Amino acid sequence: MRIPLLLFGLIAVASSLNAQQFREVTCGPNYTLSTYFKFGNQESISLEHNAWDIAFTAQGLQDAGIFLNEAAGLEGTELELFLIPGAEFSDNIDLTQLGERLLNDETNWTNGGAFNQMRDPGNPLDYGWGQYNPATQSVQGQALFVLKLRNETFKKLEIISLDGTTYHFRYANLNGSDEQSHTLNKADFPDNDLVYWSFSSNVVVDFIPKAGDWDLLFTRYSTPLDDNEGSTLNYLLTGTLSGPGVEVAQVDGIDPATITFEGYEDSLSTDLDIIGHDWKNFDLGTFSWALPADRVYFVKAANGEVWKLFFVDFEGSSTGNIVFQETNMGIVNTVDHPLFEDLSVFPNPARERATVALTLKQAAPVQLNVFNATGQSVWSAVSEEPAGFQTVSIPVSHLPAGTYWLQVQTPGTAPISQPLIVAP
Image 1 (cartoon, rainbow, N blue to C red):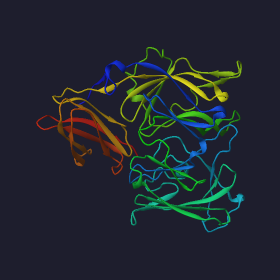
Image 2 (cartoon, rainbow, N blue to C red; image 1 turned 30 degrees about the vertical axis):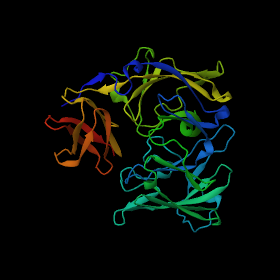
Image 3 (spheres, one colour; image 1 turned 135 degrees about the horizontal axis):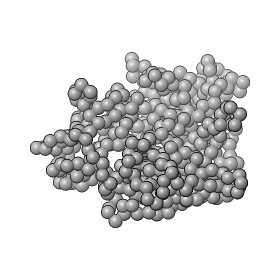
Image 4 (spheres, helix red, strand yellow; image 1 turned 90 degrees about the vertical axis):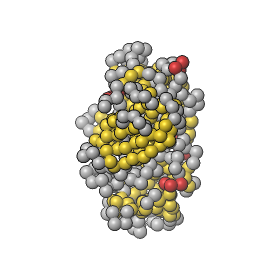
C-alpha cells in the first residue's frame, strides 16, 4: 500500500504551522565561532573552534567514523591531518615523511571523516584508518597519522583498534616522547552520535550539543574549489553543515514567500553540505556580500519536521552574523486507518537506523516487521504506544544494502507497508 503525502501539521500545533520568524546566528568577528542551531529553539549555542579536535562516531556497532575539526577563524591556525605511508608508531617521524593531507568529505556523519578517506568504498570491511577482522570482531588499525595542532606543534597518532564499542588510540611527539594512550567507549555515551576529543586537555569534551539537540552547524570547513587554472585547491570557508539524521533540499528559481514543500520530497539529501557555503557570494563590484533572492532550502529535521530556510543577510567577517527566515512547514504522511492518523519513516534511505514516526488515535500495541525482498522477516518488535505522536527506532546497520519493506500493524487491523531503503 502506498502512503499518500499531504501537507498537514504533525508536531507543531496548528497555529504554529507555516509561522515565519527571523533568526540570527553568528560565527563571530573574524569567524571565530562555530554555532549549533536547532529549528524552533530560541537560542543557539556558539563555541570557540578549539572546543574539540577530533570526533568519534557513536551511532551503533557498525560505525567507525573519525572526524577532524577543520574550523579556524581568519586569524587562527587550523588543524591539519596527514597520512604517513609505510610508517609504524614506534618510528621516529620527521616532516619530510608527511604524505597526503586528509580532510572530511562533508558527505555523512558515519564514515565521511578525514580518518576514513583512504577506505575502499567497495569493501564494507575497510574503514580507512582500520580494517574489520571478522575473526576478532574488531577493527584493527592500519595507518599512522601526523596531526598538526593549532599551536603548530606536531603529534603522531594511531587509532589502534575498535574492539566492540571501545576505541583504543595513542599519540606522541614525533620522536616518541610524551606518549599517551587512551580508550573511549561508545556505550558510555548513549545519547551521542559523536564523541569529541581535545588534545589540549586530553579528555572527552562533554559540552558539545548531543544528538537531536542541533539541526545545523554554522562553521568553517575546507572544501575543494576551482582555482581558475584547471585545478582545484582546498579553501577554508564559512558555511553550513546539516546534523546527523537531517536531510536538506535546495530549491532555486522560485518565490521564497509562496514556495511550498509539496513536490520536493524526493529532492532531500543526507549530504552534509547541501546548504554549504554558496548561499552567499562576494560581489567584487559592490565589495559586499550578495545572497540569492530566489533560493530556499527545505530542511527535514531528525524528528520529521520540515522547515523552510531563506537566507536574508550576511555581515561577513566584521561580525559573522547571519540572518535567515525559518518557516515550519509541518509535512506529514497520512494514512486511511482506524487507529493510525499518520505514519512516516526517516531517513529513507537509512544507514545506521531509521525512525518510524506515527500518530495513534488511541493507545495500542504496535507490531513492526521489516521484510527483505524474498519476504523473510529480518527484524521485528512490538511496542506499547500511548495515544498521540510517537517515534520508534529501527536498527538497520546490520542489514545489507537494498530495498526492504516495513510493515506496521495494530491488533485486529490490516497492516500498512512502506518501502525502507538501506544505503550502502
